[in-house]
Image (tube, rainbow, N blue to C red; front, side):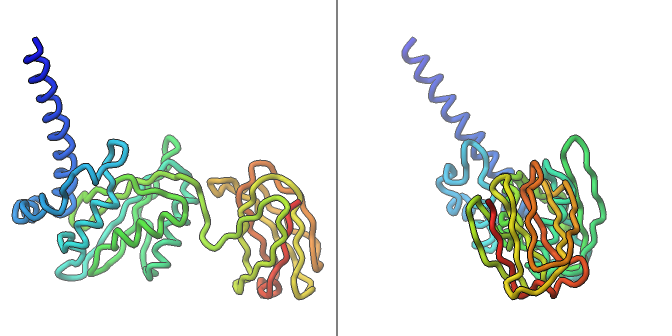
Amino acid sequence: MKRFMWIFALCVGFSVAYSAESALDTKIINLIGEADYNRNKSFIAKIFTPTSNFYQSGNLDIYRVISVLQNNGLLKLKFSAPQEFSAVFVAQTTPIILLKTINQSLSTMGYSYWIPSEAVYENDTTKIRISLNTEHIIDPIILINEISKNGFVVVNINRSKQNEWEYSLSLANSKIPNSTFVAKGNNLNIYEVSGQYWLEVGGLGRLEVQSINNKNFNPKVVFFDKNLNVLEIQELSRGQKFDISIVDNTKFIKISDSVLNSNIKAGLNVRLK
């Protein structure tokens, strides 16, 4: 009986190790293609040892897998000639925050000419497909890093075709790059040459805002929830300052000038109390 239990445990151990290795191999094949996988199988086995390093809580660590493939020259990111490339993004969030994240990330990477060719929102999940003509596949490592600045985590990448990659995202904590976090009791001077100010607030209260150069401006204040749904828009009387209550469920606030944003590009003093 003891011998049987020992053999059974050993078989289970081999089975678990095999399934874990198979999941990793399957993902590598998906990303680089079966021909390249078979051609470099021994090298791949070496650089992906131990396989346990490429899992987190039982799931593949896609960032680490992609990094090792790319750093070892196994991930082909260049086409032989310019062609249409599609990137598909899927996340359980609203279209506005996902599209803003895509736009911000690609703009930072230098991609200006792309179009959203598909946008679907069903069962609280958004799917956005973007297309562009390029000689290069969008660098996945740089894209993952840029996306993370908006609070998203890339949980999987699937190469549907050579010219189409799908990113499955999870929204850990929505963020807006270059926004300023304002906690209760904070008194901050902030500067933005564009004249548009994004704040992330840590709770309810009253927000006091004053132009640093004491110049009159025309305050336009937009309140957003965590998914960037607009909660309320207020256009206030012209002056050097304003005092306003934060709307329930607000996470982000955008302050601008309803006439000319350059009126406040010199800076604002912001206080939350």
